Image (cartoon, rainbow, N blue to C red; front, side, top):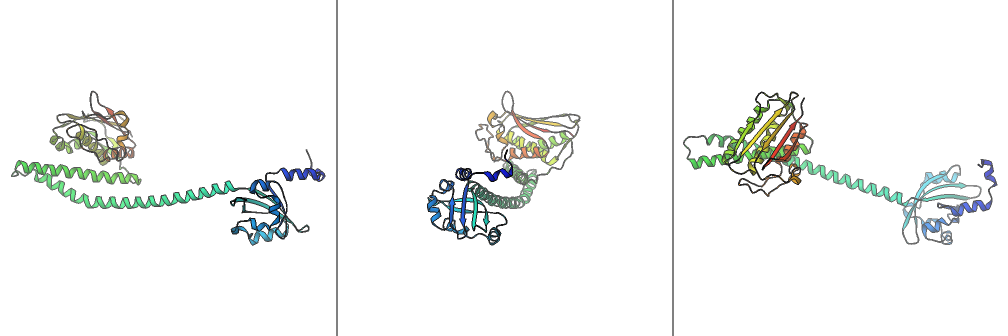
Length: 375
């Protein structure tokens, strides 16, 4: 291994070989800005012959935007006390430019500038592409945030402007249909108004909660919930719709089961949405069955069975995605879904650390399942 002192014995031939074979750009320039000597790497990098490069001031090959070195770097370079690092674009013979990173130093005594350059074009272009992509991403993110804000404002507007009138319609229609002097056709019309307003009210609440979930604002208020009582309330709220469609809803659960830890409003609406879906697609004359079981820890599983057309296996997960609709049902009560009710069920269940899924109900139909963890 050579010692530093032995380097002084390198021959001119060895130095020339090192100069010639280097893939970096070696240059010796005078203080007037002309190249005095260049290695062969220049021709490979830029396409000009070394004679062409040495015949013109070096500035003519530098991109106009970078021809003047910053004053601080130039002053440092001309002292000859240290090397200077800088980069600029050099003209190629085909009219394009290559980015070169330079390390240069000056011999004041010899009036020579010694420079070593490395082509960093790919690196610079990659960095520029990253900056461009980041800028585009920031612009798209800003547009997305603005769209989300507009959507949230629109949702709040819709909910505010629809919720109160719908509540009034539901309350008045419910009361009027009980009036004894109404004719049967009028009573049926009032019942239709009541059920339609109820469905719209559920849709408005679902729209609001789906929007809240997208914004990370669907926060459950967990409390001990008597499961049998909640399920009976959900069943009763859908009984009129079931009667209209000539269907029944049957509840099978242990009335003495321990309470579950859940958000009572969200859980009730999960069950109501699942019942609504079953009533929508199951044929007239069939029974929708609600089953529930809990364990000592409060973990619960609710199962809602119908005798509808069933859901193909490949769609059993997709139906819980937003705006996914399966409109192929042939049941007498089948109606097009808005694609939000089941999506809400998944979002509301997951907000309570639970989950919801669909299974086949032998011999025909679908079983919707909801599970909630224990304490």
